[in-house]
Length: 336
Image 1 (cartoon, one colour):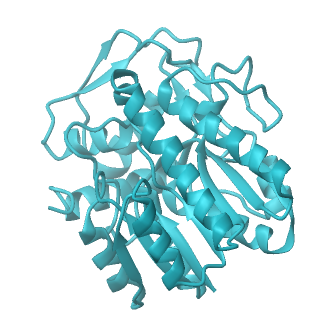
Image 2: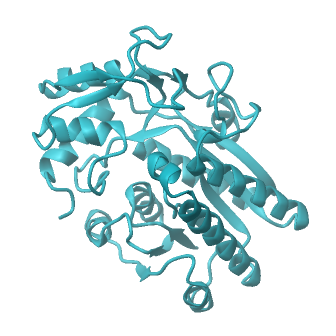
Image 3: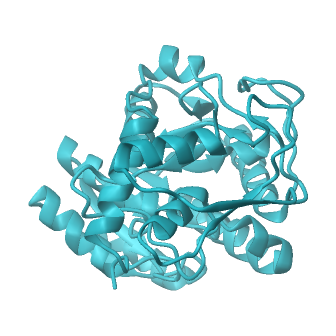
C-alpha cells in the first residue's frame, strides 16, 4: 500500500516516515524544503534500510502535484505540509492563509480527481482557542486566537464540508498538543531555522551553549508553579497515532477528530527541572512578561483516541528530555 506523505521531510513528517516504513508501507514524500532539510530523508533511509521516492514540490504547484498523482497509485494521504509558526502567522497572515488553505484545497481536489479519498490531517490543539476548562476533549467549542490556528480550524471545516458533499471520503483530524523529543537514535529531530519558536529546541540550544538563556513567558499563571502548563507528547508516540488513524480509516467511513496528547499537563518549570536533572545540565532562564494570547493551562483528554484508535502515549517527560538532548548533542548544528 502506497501512502503520500506531504511535508515528509519536516520534524513530524520524517518521524512518521520511519514508522510507516517500519510497518511495511510504501511511501512517497512531497516537501518544498522551505522549513525542512533533505538530510532528514537520508537518515530515514539509513534508519529503516528502506528506500522511497521524494519529490521537491509545493502543494501550490498544482500541475507538478497532479503529475505525482498520475505517476503513483496512492491508497491514502498523510498531510503534514504547512507553515506553523504562530508569531510569524500574526506578522504575515495572508501568506499563512494562502499557503496552508490553498495548498490543502489543491491537494484535496487532486485526491478527488484520482479517487484517493483517505486523509489523515495534521491539525492542532490551537483549534480549541481559549478553553474554559481542562482537560480538553473533542466536544469542546472550536475557535482560534491567531492566523495559524485559524488555518487549521478552516481546513477542518473545509474537510467536513467535503465529507458532507461526498460521503465516500474517510478523514481523520488529528489535533496535536505539544510534540517534543526526537527519534531514540538521535539521528533525526526538531531542526528549527534560526531562533526556535518552540520551547524544547530553545532549551537544548541553551544547554549546548548556542543561546545564553531561556526566556519564560509569565510566572503568574494560576498553575502549581505560576508557569504555563502544556501537554508535551513525544513525537514518536504522536506519529504512532497517525498509523492508528490510518488503520481506522481502512475500516471506517466518516470524518472524526482525535486529540493526540498524554492527558497530563507539565509546566514550563517542570520541563526545565526534568531536563536539568536527567541530562545534568543547568538551564539559565529569566522570567519575562506573558505573550499576548497565551493561556495558563492546556492539556488533552485523550480517551477517544484510546477507545476508538487503540492508541495511547507511552513515553514520559524523562524520555522526551533524554531523546531531545541526544539529538542536540549528536547534531549541534542540526542537519547542517
